[in-house]
Structures are given as structure tokens and as C-alpha cells.
Length: 322
Image: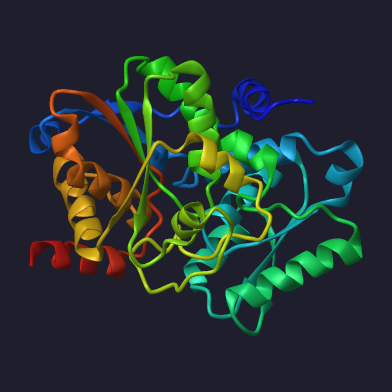
């Protein structure tokens, strides 16, 4: 049986050159602020502005010939939808994305601009996902899941391979956690290639489903509230393949407030002149909260994306100021 690590190493070669290696940039201001040597994994500089291009590209790459001819179906109004649309365009695979009519028109336009077919539905994003999965079965087309898939998680895990190659002496890596695909894949790679590196999972206090599930020892439903980290919000699917992986690879866990997230976003904007989304701000906030534990040590923060509306970003900057 092929292990997840073997899948990750295969993806590390297989997704090139369509998916670039992102830079690991030193941050002087954050290093001074945190009292440690801080490096930023710039996933927000990916072509669609998010690490999601990795998993999407790997999933499309590993489909059989019949599946590629049939096309794929997914549901997303954000980073995942953009990633699947781009991967399909580059591979000549038709992509259909189901979206809710509540989604921002700008996001719909961005997905369509990459060549995907949009099916706009009445109702919530969950309604769109349910219908997308139903149509996947009815039409016999693969459903491309945002995290609950080993090939998708393997693609995300290439972040960990790059980190081990770029900085083999890291003491810790901070990542925002949603469904667990990014930290599960990245953590798996780091455990094999850089076992001394601690894998730190960070959640917004408003959305802690995976954390609560890890604490309970099984996947459970927990309340969800509005958060700047909308890209990581949402429940974890029952039976998700990411859950047992997260149980194995996450060394430390913590939660951050909305004010801390906003401050993390603002510090990166001021120090690096980068506009990052809330989920990336979560990881920065996690480092700042635990900085005293890493004095003088070398740490990395995964800036997982930049796709945030200007109004929301400016509101976060104002919140961080007050």
C-alpha cells in the first residue's frame, strides 16, 4: 500500500512546473516582534493566491484517463474552486463548480475566468455542495474534495517538502487549521524529513471543529461563528481521511481571537507590504501568542492565502489599530 508520505513525494515532482515552489522569506520585523528567527512561507504568492492549487493540481494529475475525459465536479466559492479551475484548465479537464447564489460575484467571475463552468444554485454553500456530490454520482464524474482526499492532502503536503529543503533546521512551523488537509499533509512530510520540527496547529476561536474533534478522539460537530478566517471555517466531514493524520502529526494546538487575527494581518501588511487573508493571519497570531516559547529559535509561518475582499481587509486593519 502506498503511504501518504510516498504520495507527497510523488506529488512534489508531479505537480511541477504547473505549481511553483513558493519562497520562504525572512521577516526582520516579525523576528524583532516575536524575539525569534521568523520565516514566512509565501503560499499567498501562488497563481490563484492560495496553497489550494497544490492539492487541486495533484488530484487532477492522478485521475485516470476516463475520469479526465469525463470532467470533474466540485463545490466552492473560494480558494478551492479557483485551484480546481486552474488545474483543469492546465490539464485540459472540464471543471464544473457548484456555487451558492449568495457567493460574491467577484469570486464567481474569477472562477469562470479560469475556464470552469459555474452552476449557481439557490440556498447556502452547503446546499451547493450536497447537489454537487449528488450530480457527481449521477453523472459518473469525480468529485474533487477540498481536503477529504488522500491525493489532495498529498498535494498540500508538498509545502512540507519545500520547507524541509529550504530550511532543514526549523524548530517549529505554524499553520492555520480548517479541514486538516494542509497541516495533515505538511506535517506528514515534516515528520519524515525534519522530525525535530514541531508542527503547531492554530485555530480561530470562532471555528474549532477539528480541534474539538481531536480533543474528543472522534469527529464531532461544534458551533461555528463568523470569523475573519472564513477560508478555514466549517465542519469536518464524518470519516474524513485528514482526522487520523492530524492526530498523528500535530504536536501543539492553540486558538486565537479575532483581534489577534486582525493584528497578525496588520503586522504582515506593515512589515512585508503583503495583504493576506484571515486564515493566514491566524497562523501569524499563533506565533505571536506563543513567541515566548520560541525565543532565539527558528520558526516558519505558513501564509496560506491572500484572497480577501478589500472591505474586509480594511475593516481588519482598523480593528487591529483600535
